[in-house]
Image (cartoon, rainbow, N blue to C red; front, top):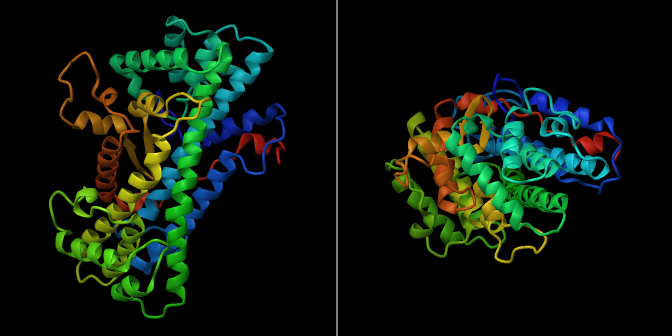
Length: 420
């Protein structure tokens, strides 16, 4: 999810400038680590892992440089983390609108967006959506705060009037079902639901998979001559099973050239612990390092990427996006993510991925010309998310050097203003 690209292209620094603008008003003291501060730490952590592991596959790669070798999962990770951070920046803007409205209501949607620092480019799509929400009965400030959540998203998707109508209708329905009596309380519950969802997912994936990557690199530095066989027998993660890792590794070698590339791993490896797939992926990266041809190297890297991404999404992200026990002070995370799905966007360096592009490339699910294809998907549904990610991988593989244009991690505007 990157900043709005319509009506004219601009860069992450526009969002960072907005963050700086938000510091003009003093903020209350914040906890030691805010969601955006955690996101900054995570993005930087991924960048460090990406370069060290990238140098395993391409010894010529140096920190800050680029490689034409097929990128590993950790090269994608900083960009995905940055997308989550931009979504959290959107929730920070929405919370500022709500806080301002508690002091003095806004005169219009434009007024609500202007007084928290949104410039003309950043407010185009939020204003459009906010006006639609007002027409559906939401008070101005509640509508404006919800519209601000799309500040960093692919606002161009709303140029399809079917997508705009569905997004507004779904947001309105979620608002009326939200906990709380007062309009701003209802809006705040939606904003907090999104912030928690993004933050919890960011933390869960980095703690587990990012942590596993760091453990592997720590082991590798002291292991001497590393081979795939040594990885499978000597490198261990808590809960990984060596026999399972060896099984997954052997399967990858046998099916790396399959078309389509294997991706339904729950069927292939029923009951396998995802930590075993992580070990197999590291062994595949080592095998790719010494592959005799670029084609073989790329095929093995892609299999390792699919192993890590499957377990990242299937085991770490899915419980966050669709919790077994919803929080009573939240709205449905599944319903909220469905609303945002058509607008999802990630810039993998210079490679831009929009969920709408993926949806339009697929057969129309309902065959109804009155509904836009992107509104027929839901990021909270595993297979909708998983197949969209595979589409993004395939796009990025065509421009491997582009992924090494790493993001500038977002600063927390409340932290910049003196919060602890």
